Length: 231
Image 1 (cartoon, rainbow, N blue to C red):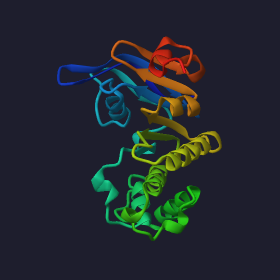
Image 2 (cartoon, helix red, strand yellow):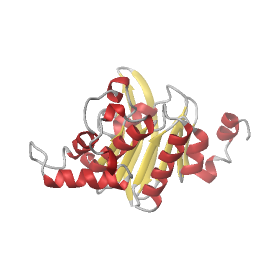
Image 3 (cartoon, helix red, strand yellow):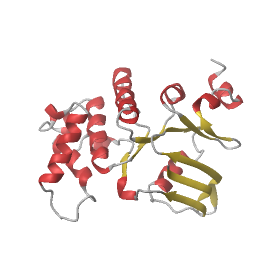
Image 4 (cartoon, one colour):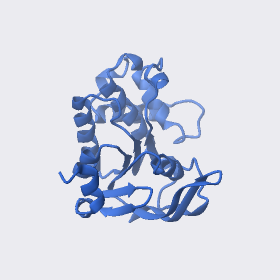
């Protein structure tokens, strides 16, 4: 079943087209990596999927979910890394939008604690977020995103700034969520090797060429050969 369908999508900033005539779909259980050079429209596409930007032409259609069912993990800023809150406070904030109440209730806390345990960081719940390592912070933000996501998780450069061990751990978590728990994943990445290793589908955005299809098909293309030097 398609969770997300983009048809003849065009997106622009003022009169500058960033994406043009783009069509692709994301099925339930997919792990899609969006790759491409800077300025190819990856971030703009993410904003469209999240409903933060409207297409100038074409459609972005959600099937069986709404925007509140999408868990989003953005790139971290320096300010976010120094956020003065406990781990539990950061994670429970991801339940906003799931309830019409103005204050957190026992269900919100239960959901937050379950996702902390899910990512093996339950023991950090009372720790200060800003005192955690980069890898631990990313796990906390992923737990927060999972509080919002029931079916679809969207990540923007999730491994940026992480050391190699933390990168491997994060990809392992995403693989487990996708294959074992059937969470559908869309991630923007500059790490082509990891994208090819972990994804079942690739969307490559370029100024003059676009590819969408299965990973095994992508690695046979001239695009992949040119970028990787044939390795």
